[in-house]
Length: 213
Image (cartoon, rainbow, N blue to C red):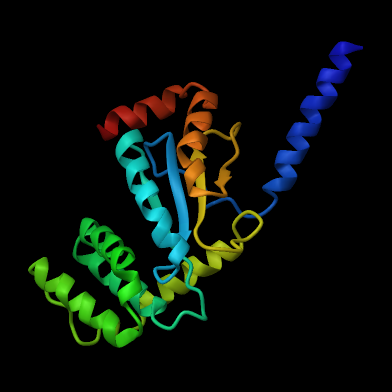
């Protein structure tokens, strides 16, 4: 009887996890060669995203796991879309430069009121990093299309992104479903829990990780 009860509990847990992640989970995977990662859907004009940024930065440094950013532009924000376009422009110059720009915008978010002041801050950033910011950052609409695709991806990921930031801790294990971090203050606790529950790496995963190093 006890065995049957345990089997039923296990089946219920599995069915619940499957139902919870019935949506697309293709974005909720760590980059190749990594066992864990943090995935965030964010809006550069979102105050909650700015507030969560220090925790994300510290988690990346302390746990040495990658942070995968996805754009999720809120239509009501008046300068957010342009900020994401400029961030992607800097990504092309250097991924590190794009990261620094996003952190810079979050740090100065309260002083940016519209696309005009955004441009002033972006120009200062470009000058400080000895690079040029063209007058027309996205003349062919390439970056805007990529941002729209990211936002659309968020709408179809899991149960659909309903707020920013939406933060997940993800692993390379099919046995350990992605876990949303509803409050950035719980990020480290969630990473610890996921790390302790992570099954041993397969031989293939170990080989990929070794090759990357």
